[in-house]
Amino acid sequence: MLAKLSDAFAFSACSAVKFRDIENITESFIYPQKKYYLKGKKNEWRGEKEKMNDEENGAEAIVKTLIKHKITHTFGIPGVGIGPAFDALLEHPEEIRNILVRHEQGATHAADGFARATGNPGVCIVTSGPGASNLVTGMLTAFMDSSPIIAMAGQVPFKLIGHEAFQEADMVDIALHTCKKDFQITHADEIFPVFNEAFRLATEGRPGPVYIDLTKDAQEGKCTKKFPEKVPMAEPRFSGQSEELKKAASLLLQAERPVMLLGGGVLWANASGEVMSLADHLKIPVANTLMGSSAFPDNHPLSLGMAGMYGTEIANYAIENADILLAVGCRFSNRTAAEPEEFAKGATVIHIDVDPTEINRNKKADLAIVGDARLVLAELLKLIELKLLKLKNEDFNWIRQLKELREGYSEKLDYDTHPIDYRRVFYELRKFVNDEDIIVTGIGCHQMMAQKFIPRKYPRTFITSGGEGTMGFGLPAAIGAKVAKPDSEVINIDGDGSFQMTLEELAVLAQENLKVITVICNNHYLGMVRQWQKEVYGRCSSVYLGEIPDFSKIAEAYGLNGIEVSRTSEIASALEKARKSNLSSVIDIHVQPEQDFGASHQLAVELQDSKRF
Image 1: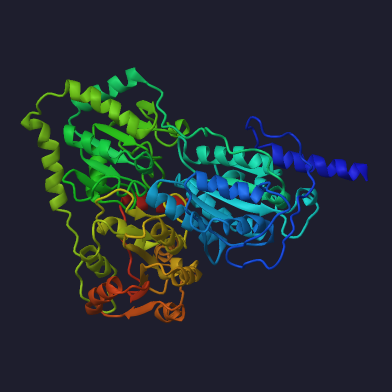
Image 2: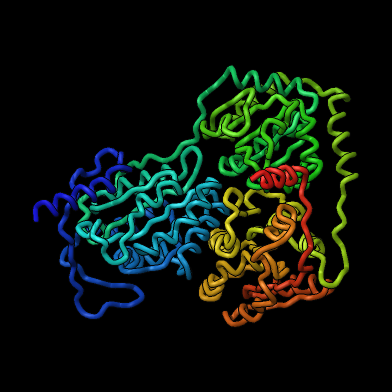
């Protein structure tokens, strides 16, 4: 018996400790389960209960911590393993409430959408076992795109860990490569320090998800600690590389053909204002990656649009011919720089990033500055303003050249065909969408067309899954964005393939009375995959989705507006009907089934790479 206890202790201690490095967390592991007794009938909605004493249990400590960190909403699904925490939520209905999603993946995407719309952490909460494992796709999505979410899940009681208990899963190991850090809490006294550390880690430096595993006895057990008076918060970091800053300023001042390339790091650092000032001071054309969309106004005269595989011709031309490339908060992923050695080959590359591991990972930098984008650019601006002289006419030659090229690259969108030309949908959307509206996308051709043809003026008004390209992201992320920004019009642009992966979250829109407009570009195919297969293999496999389902009928079944569009003349009126309605709407637009979406030369490079294997 003692040997079995020893084995269980060793197994649990290993899984609990290996990610725990916070000071003052108890070193003890085995605790008796705390029980409380209910008197009389429990109110189902308010959860009024009388405990044997006034001691705070772990579940109440969790909710208290969330409130202290100004969390107003969580996204999740209850279960036995996380039951105490959900019960504790009912004690604070005016301060925090849970949005009941229909699948745990939807919980992570909704928390992610909330985070991207605000810049603040989103929180999801689910039960143990399959509930927890269903978080993985959403955590990976947030991890790749540097989105700060706190993902918490229940766990079986400590004494059952390692015994294949019902709904047990070793999530500490499973989550390891999908988040910045993961923790397992086995005692209520660990809750305050672990949660405070989790919020700091999620937002410090390069943001990202943090996972917390909560044993059931930790939620029910007595919490003897008090919430600390001072909680260490994430602070923007900059290493103070004064010499590198001076070199960067000198290079930019001497540049003849400079280009800025913005990644998602600009948005997370709230550095759009500094980017605008630098671009205006030096007349630097600005391109962006997919994740950098909305970091710089698309309608600005210096905007080049997105660079890379699905980018604009003018952005790729400018980078190819630049003599200085100032890259801020970007990864140089293969979708942006398919051939890193050839990308901006003639340019001196200045790379600014808060994450030192991104420097020289994909693209060698001639000058690297590690730090928060907003702080670094602010210091760079100070140096430039001191040295900046009146610009000569010849300094604008580069701008004039790019302007002339841009004017020659205009693309026709207003096609009037039957079935509907894909591009006509975005012609109508471009007229319909306001600057303040928040655009969220699924994954597919519609994602790239939305980025290319719907200009964004303000930061955080374009939300998409970039690094992982997670199908099914659109609808739940739009729900999170709407909860975060209830006064904003949120428009989810989706494809029939991507939308079907999480369409059950339509129930959330109905139950929570949230208004989201979903526009489905329905071509009855996995369109981007079909195009890829055709180019690489000369034929297609398992990409035809059929004529089913009828998305407008599905929307109506959920009590929402369902609108079917099969002719060009119906698009504008359908959009206006959706905007005027108080209900969420699903607009099912039937587009040409086998229409290809053009991409740049970089796509050909990747296609060629695919054919080598």
